[in-house]
Amino acid sequence: MIIPLLFLSSFPSNQSYLSSRKETVLLPANKLWLNTGLEIKPGQEVKITATGSINLAIHRLVEAAYTHKYPRLGWMEPEGGQPLGYKDLRIKQYLISPDNNYGVLLACITTEDLSKTNPKPKNISVIGRNASIKSEKGGKLWLVVNDAVLNKDAESAYILSQKELDETYGSGKVTVKQREDEWKRIVDDSYFEAYFDDNSGAFLVQIQFAQ
Image (cartoon, rainbow, N blue to C red):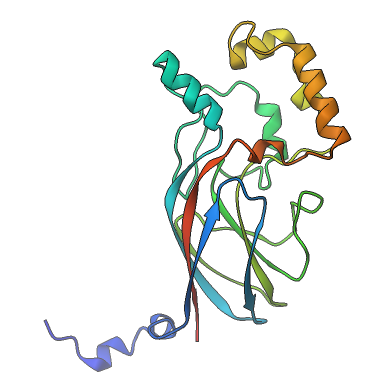
C-alpha cells in the first residue's frame, strides 16, 4: 500500500521523532533514582518507552516458592500494579508517588540531586510503558520505580502491632521486637531506602529526543 507524502505531512508531531536521537538505559529496580546523565534542554520533549519486569519483594517470592503459594508481591511490568493481599496500607504514603501503582516507572527532569534525602521532587512524571514529557527549565533525566522511601517519621508505619504483623507476614514470622530492632538500625544508619534493597529485575528504557 502506497501512502501519499501529502497524507503523511498531516502528522507533524510524529515527524519530529522519525530521525531523532535515541538512547537506551537499564534501570535496576533496586536503584533509588538513577541519574541517566542525559541532559534535557528547556522545553525539549522526550518520548520514553520501557519494557521488562521487576519484583518489589524478592524474599517474598522465594518464600512463596517454598510454600507453593502465590507471592504477595508478584512480578510487575512498567505500569506497575498492586500487591496481592497486602495488609499494611500505611506504608503506601511513603511511596515516591503515593497516588500511583507500586513499581510503575517514574521520571523526573531536574537540576537537583535526587537521593534518599530528596526522593520526592515536585515535578515527577508517571511513565509506565510509555509517555512523552518535557520540562520548562530542563536538566538531567532521572528514573526510578515507585517504591517506599522511609524517613524518621515512618516509625508507626514500620512497627506494627503483633496482630498486624501476623496478618501481613504469617503468624509468628515477624515480631514487634524484630521490627523495633530493624527500625533502630534504619534510623541510626539513615537506611531509609531499605525497601529498595529487596527489589529485583530491571526495566530497559529507551529515550527518544524530539528534534
